[in-house]
Image (cartoon, rainbow over all chains, first blue to last red; front, top):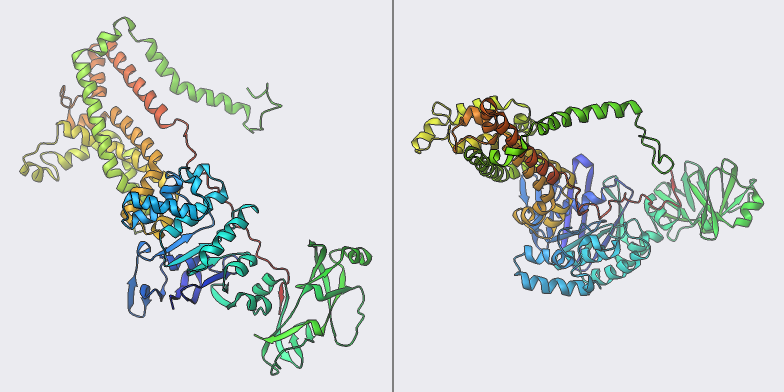
Length: 348
Length: 289
């Protein structure tokens, strides 16, 4: 294991554990305030946890609590941090920014500059070497920041929403670049974008309220979410209850579904189904293996070429024509109906 | 004052009577200066400001102010960094103490210095053992000026450090830079404008120092009699000389203010706009329990 981490920060209600192999990229996702940035800050040494232990390539980053008091300063950790904003040093040229890491490590100036030029070429920013950060666009600055982080030769690369501040034209370019550079090095990337998780990461970790709510291969987490947040990312309806028969017993009653493996009754389980499988009716037209939920519409919003109907914490996608036919408006009570065959049930 | 281009100007919301008071305030400052300029004996101006004692005083003032500014930078930069970044108990008290000379009458500062470095003072014995004599020497002038000018540099630099935040420093550290390297290559360059304006203000305050200097250093021509002391002395015997020398100090002050408050040329800090984090965590499905 290249990187292992376990830490608690009481003040922020943070307590999580994580490990990475030599080429793993882990995407960390979760609601705002879930502790994603705290995680990176603790790893980078910018926040001191109350307890815990972390090792990177056999070196202890920190080991605190239970009589231990080992702490490695941030500049000895080899954990370069790339933030949402490029944070290029404004008084240095792009090349000097990239050379900053090597020079801090004691590389002679000329050699460091040669490395900087190579790294700038690598992120397709070779022609920007002599520019000041003020003369760079957001996308250019972030590419230079990537080169600067890589030039420091980090044992672990930490990325805090690197695409979040970029416009829609710069983001794809940077995403391609990151896919290439992250392929053969360990990295942790915080993102709000499920596309980043799918493209860049092998695994995804869902943080909720400072705890890891769910963790696994990206595809699996999105297909079979076990947390409300992951279900939201995957765009799925997500109902928690206890297993009962072929479905679950939730606070709104029994939800019929199907499960790949039989779930013993009385266990915590979830019913998950896509909004596209949900139909909207004005009256309760009950056919046998169907689930029907009477809900008051809270929102109607465009969703691709469909209209997403939200109510009672559930979502349904219908065509604009159906919306007009039904005459739906917020506040109306409708019946959301989903076939049992479209509902997957699995234990939490 | 508010009419005219009203169609094109943005709404300011400043009541008219406020303008009247503002003009009055400006007059309080400008009128005395104008009155003084009106009394300048222009015919003899050059001889007055280039007389032996005047040049000696001016030279001493410039040398001591430069020395105390250097001392303010050497001592004030570490102090400002500790005040802006440090986290320890009594930090607030330390800041209050350091800023005290800003509001203290300089003559009180002079007395305090006298009882610290004077022959009978707290450190007097130790200084005498070293064979030094500080009180009533040029060194005393520099010390008195440093005492009153240090807070100007500290306040200005601490403000620059706080505004800048520590994000650049944090990034530099994760790139492998030791605290010393971060300070030298990141922190200092970033606060250089704040340091420069703080140094200019310290220089100006040193140049104008009177009370603490007179109390602690006395008024010996060529040794401790700086320009303000010379002006005060001349006022009794040769008012024309006093006015002429005052005008020299006003000119220096105007130059200093222009230097310290000129429009900042580079927008160094703001080019990386700090946009709010998008809070668009996807929640199409939502949850219910």
